Image (cartoon, rainbow, N blue to C red):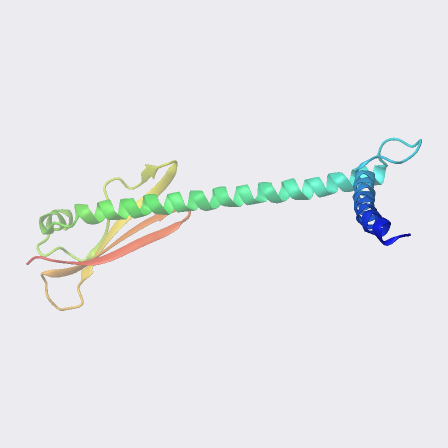
Amino acid sequence: MSECNKRIVDPVRKTYNKIRMKITLFRFIVSLFSNNRGLRQGLSLIEVSIAILVLSIIVGGSLSMFSQGHGLARKSQEKAAAHCLVREVMEEYSDWARLVARTGANPPANGTYVNPPLVVARNNVNYTPSLIISSGPLPAPELKQLEVNVTWAGGTFQVRTLKGNY
């Protein structure tokens, strides 16, 4: 073959080989996804069983995640409602005169007091708030420690503060 012919034929041959490789690769990919089972049509019982098993594992895992997420959201909502109720009780007794009226003594007597509504229902959950009055860290009668507890089926939320009549 002459040098001139070689320069013309070599690029054509390279292009032909590249196209041939692409066609071969395409045929291979198509064969992976086609049903080349000859005369036998359909899937075997083992293939169907494995497909159902894989699908049930995937669906079961997804449902489990949704269930856990719903449970965590519910617990968070219950805790937020308890926090709101604690804040309401704290605000109610932030005035010294209300503490005196609640306990019937000035300074307010130490003890545990349950709010008049014994059970507060919010979002279909029953909460029981209570107020505990105790002496403060200093031996001063005008300084009291207030502790508000809110209990419900899912737990307890507690806040403490000091209140003085100054």
